[in-house]
Length: 235
Image (spheres, rainbow, N blue to C red):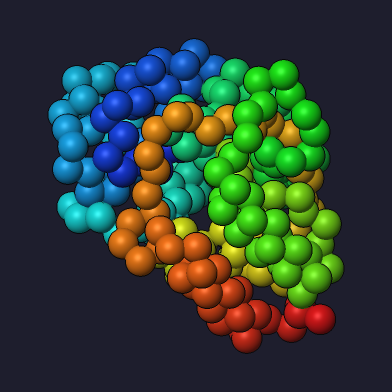
């Protein structure tokens, strides 16, 4: 059976990395979609000069979760069997896309994990990023009976038939937590694939109050609690 796969990149103000990442992605994926989530840094101009990717633009910034939902909807509407999501910040390796496509033949969700195994190119994450990931991943596993090692990695593969079963509404960075709750409730099969832990030496912001560690933890816990309130999966 031939699986039609789409690689999608949610993008917001990534002009610095856009072309170099897309050049690599297009080498490993014949169908590429960029969801430009209201960029204001020239990203849209760079995308307009390319003829090797499809683009959906949000007129204004709506959030990471909203961009992912737009990508999911496009993949389902256009009849793809699998959608790969990869970030456009230079911290994922596009050459790993074929492994995710292959693994998706046997699982509903294949999720990258930066903490599943060691790679020569690994480098240390900012301590607060590691702290937040560990705390929320542990809580997610406890409340959903999962065994994830990385709840937040954006490098994933999804079967679109499985995605179509999920109702997602979170616009922000907490959307992966809503997705895990929905996936567990729907009984989807999940596999983690190890990916290198790459953090570039440049400032990264979640935007506004979420740059504060405790505020970000509180937000993630709110999303998790809200998602669990409509689920019978929690323990």
